[in-house]
Length: 126
Image 1 (cartoon, one colour):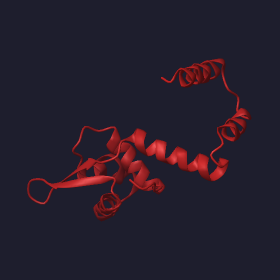
Image 2 (cartoon, helix red, strand yellow):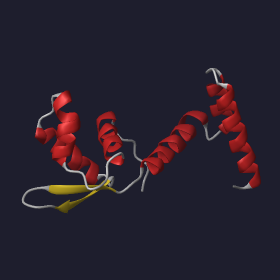
Image 3 (cartoon, rainbow, N blue to C red):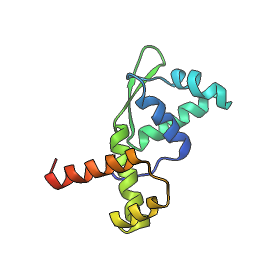
Image 4 (tube, rainbow, N blue to C red):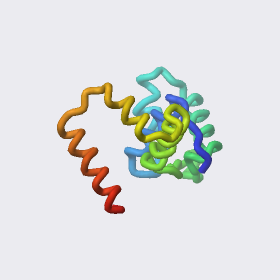
């Protein structure tokens, strides 16, 4: 899939879908997210259509007018694409530049241990 960034609202919907057992319906999203955000059902239908057109969801016909939606891309795949794009665009593919930017944040001892373990695993080819 070609890397494409999801707008915030579409990402929120995908984030919800990734936490659900497929299939998901527009009604489920409307019940969980739409009402609290003041969306009309047509807004949810439009967002699902965009996600389907862009290759993030596949749709099947359910009973009656119901449509069943299934994520095509996993959360992990999407986050990897987003991260790779971010590192390429803002850090010129430099891991050192990324870490330098993160260094300004307060890293806990646990964060540093996790990073050390990750680096060790990379060296060993795991």
